[in-house]
Length: 151
Ligand code: SF4
Ligand code: SF4
Image 1 (cartoon, rainbow, N blue to C red):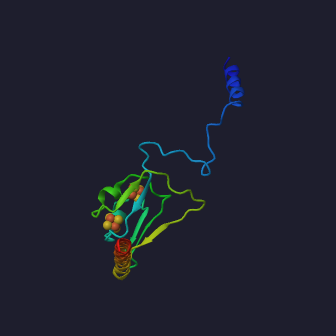
Image 2 (image 1 turned 180 degrees about the vertical axis):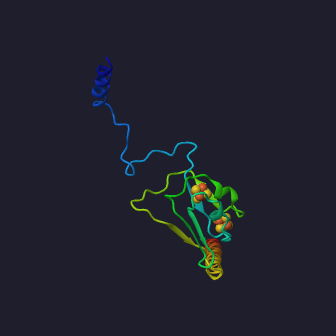
Image 3 (image 1 turned 90 degrees about the vertical axis):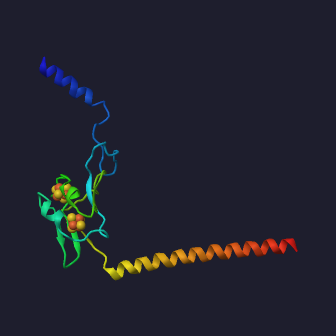
């Protein structure tokens, strides 16, 4: 009786849609409650190393002299301890799947130096000024055109 049931199931599954998908070519939306993977906002990180000390699997490495923060995603067990302990709240769980990888690797990010940050700020300021100048120029041109039409 048991083998008959099993045979029926096996035969039936030949005509059903497969339960699996061709990941990563095909993906499914991340389920609710998925812990996801760790993300760091490196600009806010002060390289204190607390996350490294609290990580139970040694997945995080903080190198203060080199100003780098690294994570071995294959070691991370998504416990969230680093996220809870970070004094600057610059760690978060991204509730999506991490990018698939074919090899074990360590992801490393460098904290931008003070001069790099100020360069970025300077460029953003310049872009804003240029935008403002373009708006003023367009308004003046529109005003001149209106005046020309009135005369
Ligand atoms: S605990 Fe937060 S601030 Fe400290 S090194 Fe880790 S990520 Fe950076
Ligand atoms: S979530 Fe847990 S295991 Fe993963 S890096 Fe943070 S402390 Fe380590």
